[in-house]
Length: 324
Image (cartoon, rainbow, N blue to C red; front, side):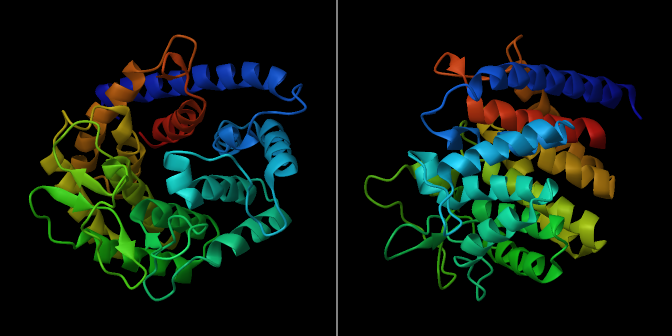
């Protein structure tokens, strides 16, 4: 191992440990609240705690979220807003991944059953927000996370459908440095931002700061998991296509929290392929994520602990430290 990689590996490991300790301290008071504002705020926590080896805490928290939020259909009732309202399926998949890892089979089947009702077998895409009526969209973020679940379950048929969807999406012609993020249910790329919609959830302006580059990071992580799980290199060409896009974007634009998923995605691809280009893309992103952590172990949003993102970075940094 190169000395620089060893140093970065240790930094990621230490950062994840600091976040873990902050999370554990936070949990002590969390369960004392009989009427929490919205337990779905902690949807990333069970998977992060499991990754840190805290299975008992992960199982207790997953059960707590289930008790307060789960309905009989397999969906979670929650006062979602902003990104989480728009990308409705995303939070559910983090909980599915946790249920799979914790071997909560009954819960896993219930949650996955709800989600697969909104999976398009023709396109391989997952519905972004199934609670809406009319003009439903699909997207590579939600679909990539479904693909991660497929890999964990070793469901190669489902994973191949996701791979096909992502290949079609990545093959879109890039015009005026715009990468469009949504497709219709017939597979057509949507190249217009709806009125009053947040443009960052519909299009990436390549090379600009604070764009939604986490879409690309999610694809990379799924592709690495696909190669790891099925020992199949057919995803490598697609991984290199995504790498070309990330290299075009450049390291400066990738050094914000909105690109954080690029780091674990590219490190995972490096671990599977040993191709240096993936590690080169990941390095500046990792350094930027580490620089954003407070000494208490969390990341900030509006000068307050960022509950969702802090747990997510704990999960990703743990994985990065294992793969470097």
